Amino acid sequence: MSIIIIGAGEVGYNVARKLSQERKDIIVIEKDEERIERVAQSLDVKTIHGSGSSISVLKRAGIDKASIVISATNSDEVNMVACLVAGVQSIVPVKIARIRDPEYATNEQMREKLQIDLVINTDQEMVNTILRILEIPGAREVMEFAEGRIRVASLFIEEGSSLAGRSLQEIGEEFPDLKVVIAAIYRDHRVLIPRGKDIIKERDLIYILGEASTISQIISSLNREETSPPGKVMIFGGGHVGFLLAKALESRGIAPKIIEPQMERCQFLASALDKSIVLKGDFTSHDLLEEEHIRDMDAFIALTEDEEKNILLALLAKTMGAKRVMASINRVAFAPLAYQTGVDVVISPSLLAVNRILQYIRRGKILNVAILPEEQAEVIETVAMETSDLIERPLRELRLPPGVLIGAILRDEQVLIPRGDSVIHPGDKVTLVTSTAAIPQLEKLLMVKLEYW
Image 1 (tube, rainbow, N blue to C red):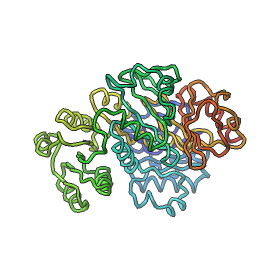
Image 2: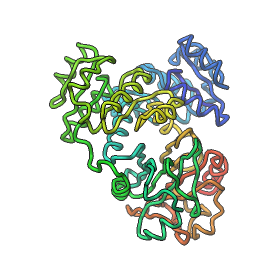
Image 3: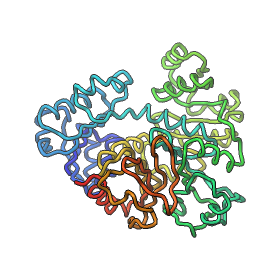
Image 4: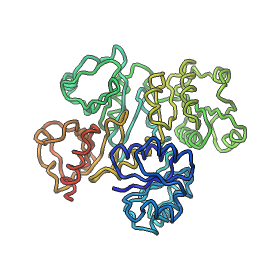
């Protein structure tokens, strides 16, 4: 599979890094010399210095043999033109474009004319992710599947938690009607796909999978701190993401406070937003945070363009009393460090983009993909086809690869948490968790059995 990636910014770079680790044939096109040098030195991919909207450059990249073209530059126009040129020059099966402008991103007619298969709006993806996390106090991550009916949420096991020291089997026997499953455990920088005898320990990060409404109730009941959604939110950084988030919060009856360093941007925010309080301040605004009662904030969200500043700002807000702090981080490798230093939630636009793109990389009838910590496991939503050996047989009789867990089934709008005697029917949407090591085996199963290739 030949994949051309146009743009080697943080989104393009992380997509290339992830796919190169899976030994895909990757060609990266970038016109910035420093960025292309970074890719050439750190990744095992082919590189071409030039513009991705250039016909000659695309021909040099082998556009006539490409299976996928991903245009992820910082320019919406360049990304759209690159996909257009790619379509004119060759019949590329899949074209993906990063588009930030909502007018472009939501324009279905334009997308059809350009024959773009997937539009990635990382700004809106970030806002949606933050809103989901804010809905469930205590959750570090909240991922949606099956059109939002199924969720996966992560919860940090504090010292003294009622779950610590207990096996999954014990918890299941005590709560037999609990329609959720602990689908993964992140411990000591390792992701485990657990079985019944595995024991939850203090300081584990567990991933709970189940029906969306049930997930919210479970996380809230296990969280010993505030269980109601936040009413007081402070945003540091009034860029496009901060603006979109403030608008979304206003629509939910929350009037956030936004701190932005540039006066011109402050004036725009003040005129474009209805209920938000806009304040001019910079990275050194310790006194401003104090004056604006940071200690009373239910959530503090750092959304500047500088990820290192975001981490430091979140930590400062935490030390000053904010109940929950979040930071936007582009470089995926920074996330473990941010968590270790005390940041409650990390949001990565690069990782969100990779999740969307993997839907087109994975073999089989794949609807959705989400990566778990340190890229050691994935949650995958797929469709069971009539030709599959997975259907009409109890799950206990299936020979799934080690490290694969079937977590939920959506059938006729009903969410089912499967047990050993559960049976998958044709057309079911199946959400499963798999270790990265098991993905090649799983892909063969999904490709050959589920779709009868």
